[in-house]
Amino acid sequence: MSGDEATRLDETHVVEAARARAELQDFGDEAFREPMRLLLDSLDREADLNAGGRMAQRARVEDILVNRLRAEDHFRRSPEILEQQLAPPIVIVGLSRTGTTMLQRLLASDPDAYAVLWWENRNPAPLPGHVWGGHDARIDDAVEQVRLILEAAPQLASIHPWDPEGPDEEILLLEHSFYSTTPESMANVPSYRAWLRTRDQTPGYRYLERLLQLLQWQKRRAGSEAARWVLKTPHHLGYLDVLFRVFPETRVIQTHRDPLETIPSVASMYHALWSLACDDPDPLEVGRQCAEHYAQALARCLEVRDAMGPERFVDVDYRAVVRDPLQEVRRIYEQLGSSLTSAAEAAMTEWIRTHARDTRPAHDYTLEKFGYSERGIARDFAAYRERFILPGSRS
View 1 (cartoon, rainbow, N blue to C red):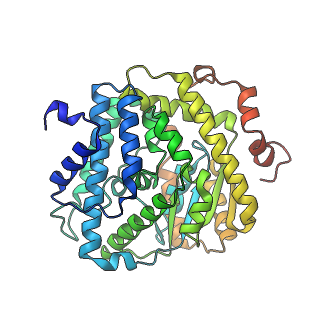
View 2 (cartoon, rainbow, N blue to C red):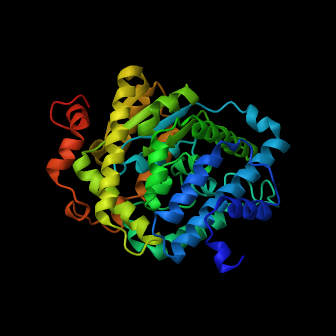
């Protein structure tokens, strides 16, 4: 592929390149086409991408299309995949930086739990030539991807615990439908972002269901049987109604931490990611978008909680997880009506021993860099803080 071709952000060229690379034609449900076109146009016109950013964003969209082609090929050749009854999901939601990653990885260490691993997120379908029972080349790809990401932006190591073989957010699976907030965390795509906020997210969640069926089929072929999925992503905060509609057996664990602490940290993470694709991203615009997005998502979350009733939710204080993670897990299992087996407790104890937070560098940021003030954040998140954070709240 020529240099110019590798940076072209238009539907025709990206689709043709993906089909040629995968040597396949069928993408399945075409609902992804409109959001993909809008994303490509927004990246091309609005994101102020540098040469490396254009190449990376083009490659990301092409990779997603190749994955769709490979997944659809597996659905065609193995129709039993879509007959899989998904193990009931436990879904962790919360603002970014509230301990969702720690809690997911802790719960996913239970031998009776499935989780989406980072390398599965990046390549949900087996690569061509894969031999069942042998080494999976997708892991090697993921290790190299993480190495390159941290080489390009070392500051990301202090923001997120990168583990190419560990559980991670299924928002990267949602991204395969192009109904995902991932792109706006990586570049300034205002037109795509505005379109996404006005659309029913059901097509994205339906495709997520298909990809989870594909992953569960693979896990079972590898000899793994589990009673539940442990999923997590802050993305679900704004779409809990859709989540419950597509996955009706879902139980939600919501983590809580003061937005005064979390929102500036999220903005710092977004700014680091934007900096990979754009030479001089505006921190004030990053800050505005982060605060607006999460304020709207939490408002929708509170509406759904009020409509659904408390029995579908377990509330978790970030400080309690940090202070005594195993004790908090015992409380969570009790509220879920599950038993914490000795095998699960042993696995979680080992995970805690080997994953201390202080092994990573500190994450430094300020409110002012992103145009924030304590008063402004308190105003924007007043209803949430009153309900879950301030003294006397219900949590």
